[in-house]
Amino acid sequence: MSLMRSLAAGISGMKGFQTKMDVIGNNIANVNTAGFKASQVNFAELVSQSLTKPDARFGSAPSLYNQVGLGSRVSSISRDFTQGAITSTNVKTDLAIQGNGFFMVNDGTQNYITRAGNFKFNADGNLVTDAGLYVRGFNANADGTVINGGSAEDIRVNFGDIYAPQKTSLVNLAGNLNSNTSVSQVLASSNAFTDGSNALAVGTQDLATMNQTNVALVDGDTIDITGTDNAGNAIAASFTYGAANDGTTLDDLISVINTAFAGEATATLQDGKIVVKSDKLGDSSLSIGLAMGAGATGDINFSTLNVSVEGATNSTLISNTVYDTQGEAHTLLTTFTQTDFNKWTIEASFLNGESVSAVNGVNGTTTMDIEFDDEGRLITPSNGSFSVEFDPGNGAESMNFDVEISDPVVGAITQFDGAASANFVKQDGYAQGDLTDFYIDATGLIVGTYSNGRSKNLAQMGVATVANQNALVHTGNGLFSVNTQAGDLIIGSAKNLPDTTISSGFLESSNVDLAQEFTEMIVAQRAYQSAARVITTSDQLLNEITQLKR
Image (tube, rainbow, N blue to C red):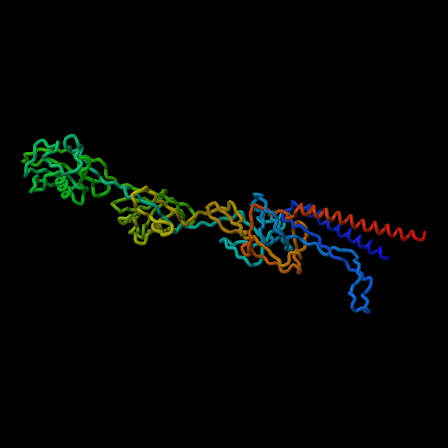
């Protein structure tokens, strides 16, 4: 009976829309499930029944098949694998994939894939899911090298790991040495030469007309110049007054002083005072005296030249830590002493008295000399480095390391008239380190940080892909199993997939769109009601038919 077709169609509609409501309810229930992917129901028409066939007697008539449908069915329930929103959790082991791929986990017998990245480390150091499944990837070897492309393995971190020490082989030193670190001795007259009430600004004043001249000088009068050089050796000279002799001015007298002390000191006139500065840096026995010579008729009241600046050989001390073969730290002291203009001596020593056996390959010495040009650039040693050899004194082997002081990249030692900034900027040794923390970068590398400031790779998160995501079988807990319809499971890392990164401290939220789900719910409800009305209406028609015999 034809009414049975309408009853069957109505029933098929009700069944289909019941399934749709089941899917909508599951989507809404998982709106807060990390990594959840919403599903949707796809319908297809059931087979149609032909009531008549086209009449072949009338070839020019339209060929119309008189068919009536028998209802609908659920053809498939597909899953929406679009990206869900990324939300912060501030838990380092919570991971979210942005882009393609899945995390791979294993229950001990079978691999699964998931987008839910809420992982934890268990007591054995294995990275696991909340349900205890092992997260898969690639573990690093002892030196931190991760080899991708091999067989995936359970990710495990040894939180008792240590970072082996490394002895220092290279130290870099850079910065400025103040060119005025050491000072020259300076002598100055206690009183200024004057003309009237003013100190002489220039030395062109005739000696006979200064305020300090008690009796005017005449040609042939002499002035005795006595004193000692920087080393304490006696110096004696004489100035003879007169235009035909050594001269008549204060400048002429200073010129004779400079000739007498050539190579030892230089005299100038400053604010009316004779100032004599040693030509050498450091401690000095320099002294100068001026007095009228025997038989001179003129008389000048010369003031005593006293020491106004003590000569001093000063140093710049910098320190740095170096490490021996056992990882023990030793404090290296490097003393830069300015011995002369553009010349310095470097002395190497250790704070705790470790013995320095050689500097720059010379056994039994702890010092070496360096030199700068007149522009403050290092010229000696020509290779821009020197070596230090010492005995750590703790059973470790004797050590030899290089000190680089003219590296074009790291920096060089200079000598300018400015602040002293020389310091150790780099060294390649370190002590033993304990694993203190870790972080996970955007490529999924788990990187350990150690107490010695070093870091190394511990493992690499695996990221799996399949050719046909819609063929994946959902097994609960956000897990999918892989079958032949999904294609081969390929595992690599985020850096091998375009536009794919891993965010640590974040989780991918469910991609359920509540507005869309509620809209679909309304549609399903109305469609279900309409299908029910088809059944009730067909029932009423059947009832009319059964009443015909009455």
